[in-house]
Length: 635
Image (cartoon, rainbow, N blue to C red; front, top):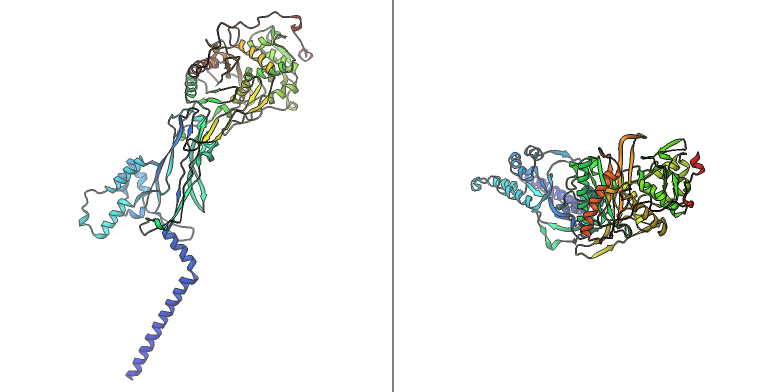
């Protein structure tokens, strides 16, 4: 009986052991065979790490190599609430002042929270971003403050568990993200803000993960973002149980390729001269905005481009959308009398008129197409040259009638209106030029006066530059070259001709007429320079709101270049709704003069003026230049 009982015990024990071994074998087979790939992947997730290596964003430099925008590496400070126990308030009080954050807000972020992930597993937040763009020096202060948390605690009296908790709280609970971020720095603050633009944070998919990176939002930062950004590198390696890299197990190590430096045609000194003069004009005339461009007519190189109000590219969020808008390329305005250069130069080029040809300006009132056109003074007989000198609307209208609507339209398009200039900045608009079949009866007379078309200040400046450049329209040039971090030139850019608009002879005649504008008899004597002959044109146009012209609201402008015969610089100034004085010759022309005098001195432009120029109309009217009334005008 005893032996039988012992036998059953042995049998049961054998069966139990056999069953246990069978389960163990099944489990081993399941883990090692059926779930091998799954578990191997999980094991790699625990020890295998891929670190992204951020490239340095390239600098933006001015024409002389001065820094306009640069980048410094910074940290993203994070925290693991699961390692803090109930000490969130103490941690918040310790680090919030260093990070310049609200302690109460930091305390809330440090509280542990649970959520269900995409796999349906309940997880606790172990990664909380406290602040981005933290300089290394600031992070060092945070790290030191955490290491010295609870300095009066005697760790020798703590239990092993409490010592471990305190060590993790001091060294692991607050940490920097493994991927260094970059802080964009603009050393000159607001200088050239509308050219440079600004950056922001954008998300990008990388191997199935979303990463945050610095991207250009506006201006040059956006226009050449891919050139500035560079190419990200990476490192694939193994880590131990303390997340330290096991160097000899490193699989891949690819260096990042830093972004290229972008060298602009902007000269920071000229840019500062321009912005200073615009600020003085803003203070004196109190317009909604004031804009300016300084460029070289022969090449299209832009040395200065600005608009006020402006903003700080380091902190664009504190400015309004209006102040961030680059009005030089985004604002549509009726140009007013500056547009007269188009119709007169076109008529000269077609030999429809000469500078000596005389028109009857009807004593200031001219009926055409069912409308009455007016001059600001009751002019009688004026030559074509004097029409420019005095800026006669009626005279320009009659020149346009002689030129004809088809030719007038062709010259408008050839001068670059209705299309973008091609400046490498985002946001440029085309302007508005209606085709001839959409014109009204009065359009042929109104458009030569600068009404019925909408242009940008840059389009108007480039059109005047074409006249200064012997009739050749240039593409505005803002980027000189790209170079790597060692200064090696990667890409060199040069001037680009768009087309010849008028002949060199017609251009020469236009320059002669435009010189008379800047004289005592012209509309812009306040643009006159002591040492240089200036050629230019004023513009004063009523603003259009809700499809109607508004009394008392004007766009005032002046565009001029010097020395007139061999132009080195062209300067365009536009004021939106100046208060009090509103004529372009009284508001924009003095700003032009201030910029021109300072820029000429800085750039050492040789003077060309030895004596006072003669006044306009220094000739007698011949029989071939008698007053002309066209059939159209008689209607």
